[in-house]
Length: 370
Image (cartoon, rainbow, N blue to C red; front, side):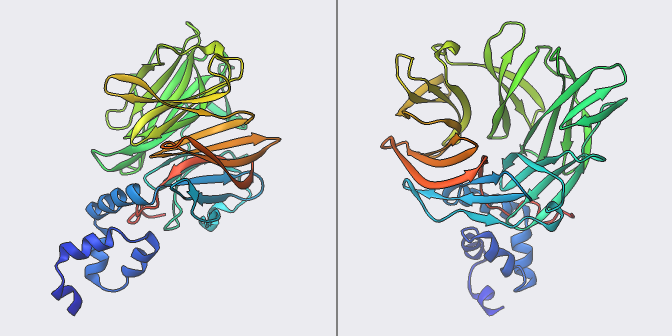
């Protein structure tokens, strides 16, 4: 095209990198050179960087009926628009009950437990691209019901799922922990690689016994669970690094007192792991939300927010905004908190038993086959 010959290619790429995903998909049809530029893996990383700076959102899964995903955008403590419904591929609108278990770089990880076969779904709703992954099984094991498995030795176990991105190999990965229900012993840990389209068993896994809690969070290529040691009865954070495929245990802040009541959630503040402690009204701080951030020097308490008379179920921190779900009688009310002013706002949006994650529209999976 004449335009392409008169405008430097670097400038065109820079302009494309700031466009929404839907526009880029249309522009791929303009010419062969546009198609090659937009489908280039390096462009995916450049576009993702811009999206993380300017278009990071929250994604909600609404309970009840077929899979329903909605995105929310905040800017300067204001809801930019009403929740936008993300249209998933028709394959997900079946009788199977899908559950969102993770979100990373514009890709969602979902799981389902039908009677006959168990799948994981790797979904980019922005480009309606879906990869179905057959759920791995332990040898001599079988699915019982609702994510509970049995083995020939009579023991029952469940699974914990983590989803993230290996930046070194540009690979989306899933980690699954098979854990005995009663003893909490880990039977096995398996990792799925999208690039390899295969599972492998990890040999170097922790010997500790944990109770693992939801929800979790992925930050900078690592997945974090909030856990309680069965042996010591101490709370801590368990990290899985998707690049090195190793586990690491992180201590809670020194002042953490599990007797204070309330709940604890993991989040992300400006690209760093955050810990959100909801202290109940009987604590010395009153009914408040403390936001701690993991700095190079360790945990630092950065914010304290008054959250009186809220039934908080989920906290998601992102940049200068925290999204809160106040759930009562299975109805979730969406609130946000401006971390600069510590002002709390109820946006008047109600959803039925929502699950929430951070979400950035991206071109991920563009070259993948369904």
